[in-house]
Every structure is written in C-alpha cells, then in structure tokens.
Image 1 (cartoon, rainbow, N blue to C red):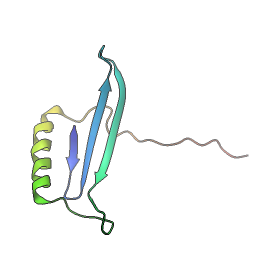
Image 2 (cartoon, helix red, strand yellow):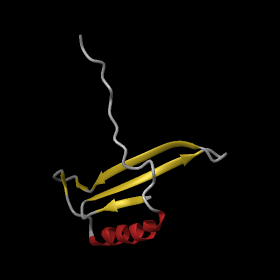
Image 3 (cartoon, helix red, strand yellow):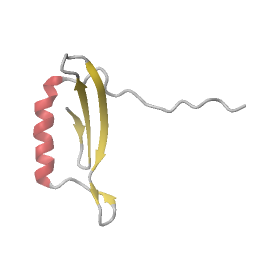
Image 4 (tube, rainbow, N blue to C red):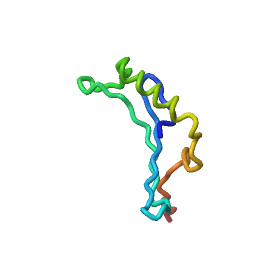
Length: 80
C-alpha cells in the first residue's frame, strides 16, 4: 500500500499473510529515487510521478494501517 510520496520519495507498507489468514510479517519502507551517475537523490520522472499520484489516490480510501509508522531500534545492553 502506498502511504505517501513526494517528488523524490515514496513510503509504502506491506503485510504478508499465511494462507489461513493470520498476519505473518509486516514491512514499511521509505524509498528514494536515486540517479546512480551522481549518486544523488533526484525527482521522479513525470510519468513515474503521475503513476505514484494515481496509486496513492486509489489507496487513500484504505486508510493508514494500524501497524504503520512504528519506530524500530536495536536495544543495547548497558555497559558496566
């Protein structure tokens, strides 16, 4: 599900469900459009941006998933 985008980035969320219907995994990602000749982050070409706008409009009715937007971290043990 495409949650958001701008001229250079897109944020999307995915769920993987078992054949029996229970939730097996989730994934939320922020992707950047990179020109590898730089490398640097650059705007999407107009046709790609138009597709992102169309998809986000279609996905808007789905709402933001409850599990989206959570923070992640690696918990470290305190030294000492």
